[in-house]
Length: 587
Image 1 (cartoon, helix red, strand yellow):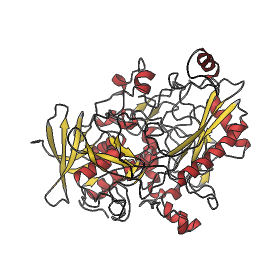
Image 2 (cartoon, rainbow, N blue to C red; image 1 turned 120 degrees about the vertical axis):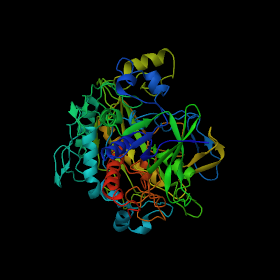
Image 3 (cartoon, rainbow, N blue to C red; image 1 turned 45 degrees about the vertical axis):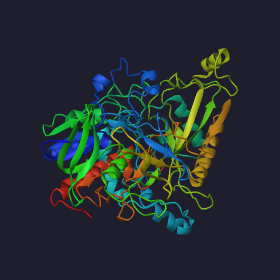
Image 4 (cartoon, rainbow, N blue to C red; image 1 turned 30 degrees about the horizontal axis):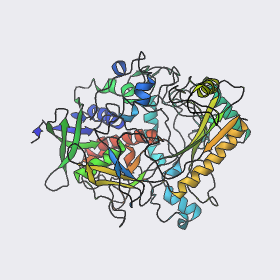
């Protein structure tokens, strides 16, 4: 039987980006807050010191910072006719483990969605006709607009010190920035990162083809910065150890560098680490949460009563916790009824690899989110009328480190081992060059999450089952983007090049991105969404899923973190300004 703890005003599940932002906002409001985090405490000084943090074998290959399947895993399949099997080693995507979550190991790419991304279904129907949208595509409008979220995008970018160059200040286009972005109320808090040689070459080639390259918005900070919480951040050293690594230089935005130093000073906040929340507890009516139950590392079960429950775990695990807790009706793809698990989406990436001649790139000098991008083929920035698909993505160049264990560019036909391979890899290491696309993944009736009927975890709970595959729409979109990218690559006159558009079926053993979205979708209709426009559960009003990517109705052409951060602040204000004054449904 669970041991009951003293009541808190707020209990937060997970202490990553959203959990730390919400914890700070709630605690500053004077509420008594506890965050329960499955993984260990992680601190910049002790966990990521520069003396050993750049260990590719430990972090890049053996995945020291990531979730282990024996902690939590899921089963996967491509379609409903298959029997899902458990993931026994995370490869296709890499959930974080511990305080800071996936924000510890991210590259730092920080985008805002396009204004017409937020009314996607309406926009496409009005421009092309509703009958042009595939019958099985379940995309829907967001219940918020870009204009409503803009102040919250701005707030998150200032918290994280994002480096970049505005392309649209209050409706006025700005030279050097992204001409397609939505309006911004202010310039980026720090200027763009310095560009490496490869990115400069890409930008030059893109300009010759008539495109408008701009520096990628980055959570790798270009100069020393003090954020609104008074926390100081360092300048990026271009070490190239971002993705899969923590940053020991205090230069990559994360909960550790942006929020926790201020949060941990608040006396009304506590963190319970190494403890997994197993369910959200409900009262006898099933309409009110009474808190959560969690299990610590000794196997002891605890009940944490609370007036408000904020579900801030990684997107996939938000969905599973809602399913296990019986909050919201589980989605049924056959009938199309139900909401929890509906509209799961991923990301559609591709690239072109090259070997350049007579050029030395020094590609080990890098950042996770540097580089030059173009946005002419993102969202609906281009006419889709006769293309046979919807969606798009950004494309560009960004050297992220060329770490020597996993980065070995060699000419075609080179043996995979031996003397010839050694000679080739030495000759081409500094002339290998990759450029990439990062595209949308729209939602479909038969791409969803539910509880597996066979496999269970160490607590005897059903694993979550993922049913997903790339659809014709996304494959056509990827081919189109990759063809445009190859045109830029050819302008660089490489010795050789290989274009690799995304193909099906989706393979969970090959890394692509960690951008899993949907499953607890936000919306204006409880028949097609789990939470309302304030990320509040339609069924249990004191449960919120504030800002995690699980609330995305579909995934657009950008990385999700900027929108996740904006939604966290959006939800925090809704709780502070509206819910606390009159607890109950906000819509």
